[in-house]
Image (cartoon, rainbow, N blue to C red; front, top):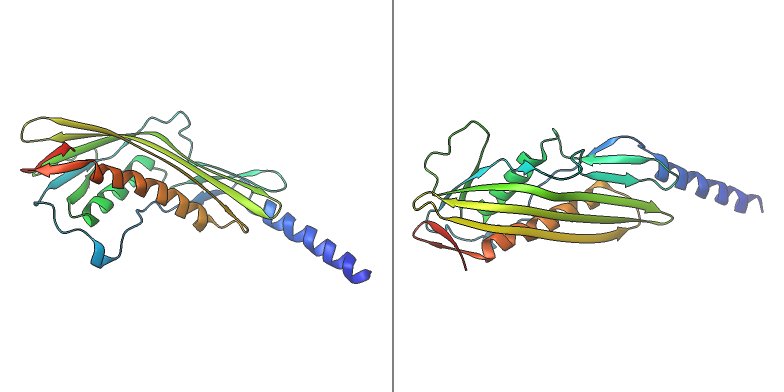
Length: 208
């Protein structure tokens, strides 16, 4: 009987630690695309040079990326290191495009994008992460909506496309890396659509 009581007490203590540890803290999430193995990466696409401007954050709630609700109450907050979500997501897109054979670089505000064939601008309309811890599991939900505008420098034409994504997962133990993985999977799905739904013709980007 004594052993059973001790196990119950230990179990309650464990859930208390899991549910309350880090309440109120800011949890940094590394935003980076999920890249394929090097041997599967695309060859250069006709030498297309792309300048990616830092994205504008137009989300309704601009305070971080979302929250984790702890088992026994209280919340923690997700965000990117440095807090500049528009720049971090733009860099992730540039990294993904480079892996697909484009020559992509991020251009920060006030910097000229000389030599680019295409200039990409974007607005974050939705980018949110939610993690809710319960007894024995944590449910992770992520949504994303990014409006992209690509400007072809040679002829002034525009390509507009909206990248949407959502995903969820349920894990036994809460780990920020699981949240980070779901977020990056959603963003990568959107980036992939940009490549899949466009084609390059004489260093011009066109919708298929």
